[in-house]
Length: 444
Image 1 (tube, rainbow, N blue to C red):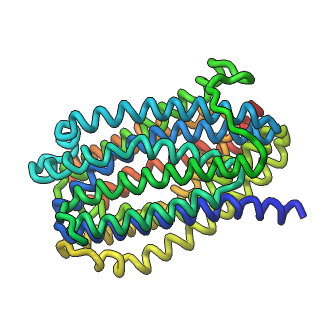
Image 2 (cartoon, rainbow, N blue to C red):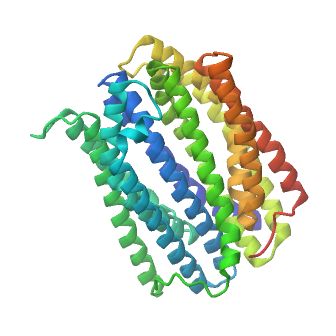
Image 3 (cartoon, rainbow, N blue to C red):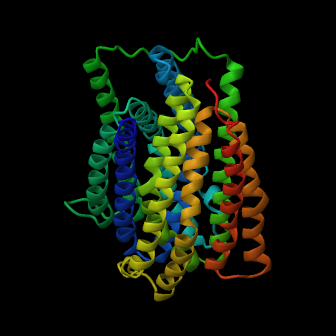
């Protein structure tokens, strides 16, 4: 009976999160097709501007991750008041960081985009896109924080519904604003940026109203109070700082990779950009297991039931491994159909297919890292261990291999991607050692 109950809990969280990630990736594919019709320069411009947006998203994701750890454990311990205080504090921090990112991207877009490409047309288009899309950073932070609170309360269906609504709106606005329909002037890639802002704002508002409705239904009045009573500032920083440093440095490495791709060539950068939606769709399909792992294992640790936490962790890893092999096979079988929908050069299509072959080969390792390091081990609050492993893999292996393979060995972009992906294997080996030793399990 307990087994069925656990599987039901996994599905209750994992399926809505996975569907949400997959739908977002699907909408990204539609966006890519629309922007792709404008040519390779526009595709590359949106791709490199999106890298800086991803940097911001990862930093906010670090705060959201910490909030998820704290909220899950306190809910497991039946202390909802402290869980709400954890949400309030992390929401305040995320909004402060969002304000800083917005200001920097609005004031210095050309300088930032110049770090990713030497092509003047690409830099100009990317800077224009970034200046507009940065206005959606604050709504994005609000949406991420509220979504996390709802998922920890096992109300993951609401973020899914609101994400679908925002995604449909974004796609419709893209069509209108990119191509100039319904009386609007054609804005090109800038239209895609404006559509993103509007959809993120709508999503954030829907989530806030939805969370308020859940609280009213439960008869619980949420109070915004960023002052923790069960955890000292030192304890909070011991959890927060490693995650923050980890996510920031990981995202910085992704931006290094983007810069490497951009300097290899505009067409190669466009090819890599075309693969991002498929990568997001594939990883997103199993990201729900990582979210479920963080929440459900965190609750078991909050109860102090370490044996149950370990057993359930192994089951989640098995689910992820099976799913990753199925999805990797699907990528190989369908990649030709995917690349053919774009109106880009044949060289770009062929290069994108080669990159997708490499991605399919390493995706099972990526998924295991996502569930094991990003969900299970992190749920115990010992984030310093995760930080050390991630930084060692990324900056000890991934970044040096990317620079060597691109600038010294002069390899093509698919082989550059293969070389830097070795970091995933290093991280998995180290994280597995920590997992089986069980020293990650603790009640905060």
